[in-house]
Amino acid sequence: MDYAQALAHLDANANYDKTGTIADPSLETIERMMSVMGDPQHTYAVIHVTGTNGKGSTAQMITRLVMAHGLTVGTYSSPHLERINERMSYNCEPISDEDFAEQIGAVADLEVLAGVQPTYFEIVTAAAFRWFSDLAVDVAVIEVGLLGRWDATNVVDAQVAVITNIGLDHTEFAGPNKTDIAREKAGIIKSGSAVVLGETDPELVAIFRAEGGAVMLERGEDFDCLENNLAVGGRVLDLRTPTTVYTDVFVPLNGRHQGDNAAVALTAVEAFFAAPLTEEIVTEGFAEVLMPGRFEVLNHLPLVIVDGAHNPAGADTCAQVFFEDFHPEGRRLLIVGCLKGRDPVELLSALRADEYDVVYCCTAPSQRGLPAAELAAAARAVGCDDVIQMSTVTAACERALTDAGVDDAIVATGSLYVVGEARPFMLRRRMA
Image (cartoon, rainbow, N blue to C red; front, top):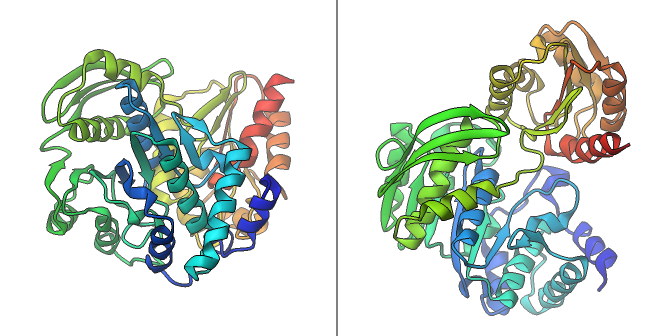
């Protein structure tokens, strides 16, 4: 199987990213596949990360801190921005096309032996676990794909279970309340797991305590971000863990919320090693963190920002970072697209779209993309005065760049699909 055949094999299987539905939410298929493969997910230590928002950034911080400690790390995340290879990496280097094809081919051969018809996500998850085992990684940092309890990644037995926060998302599978979401995410906790909990709502905290785990570390009680200050290119933080106060820690990511993510990540790594980290490891690990597509500044003059906010909580954070930390002298231009199933009015309101001078509404490049006309109608409904309807993300980016002056700011957001198309286009234009 070559790379093109591997992609074709994946596309032939049920894919939540394309359909927005899951026929059989259970672990039965992935457990059968793992058993036939010899349970590769049990051959290395695991730090398992879930949460409504921030889990991608937190997983990357954990990865970098563990690498700075001298260990080899396999990282599994989803979805990808531009290429599926991004989903699995070894010491932050994405899997090669050849290795990807080999792993997908191996899993495909085992599907018949296992007697199952796995989904797209189950195949990729199985391939990642097998690849990490082949590489003999010291640690795997595994990001949950959807919720937790029946997510395909939950066949691991995590030494550390991390929950960043709880918001209302994926309520079609676990809802309608945050308590329902919390119960599903609590499912990643195993009896021997050290639990690092970033959520602070007492009602939700009680749900995680009830799930068990070897030890529970809670934000606000056992760890916290004490100081969180804006700096050039990121934040400067004072972080308190159960053992240590780390001062003047630079994290090269935008947004006050990254302070909370950093506190969670640092505590998770301390829990994994059962010891504090040296100042050198903390400095080195955080300094290397990169998060493409997460409030990423791509250009200046005009300022160009892309952010993968795709739910109201993420959109609210995007707006908070932009309006609090960035003050363009010129106009504010918003490029936005979203998926069907999202409430566009709620998303646009959270983005504070009515505070932008121009809003370019486009169709997200997905079978689930909400038509630009519907999104434009929602933008007008929330009070946006200058709304421009564009058929594609690329067309919206081209128009916004044409309209923008050097003092203006452009933000492209609303879906990772939007960012996945806008980011490479904007970078190419920057290099032109």
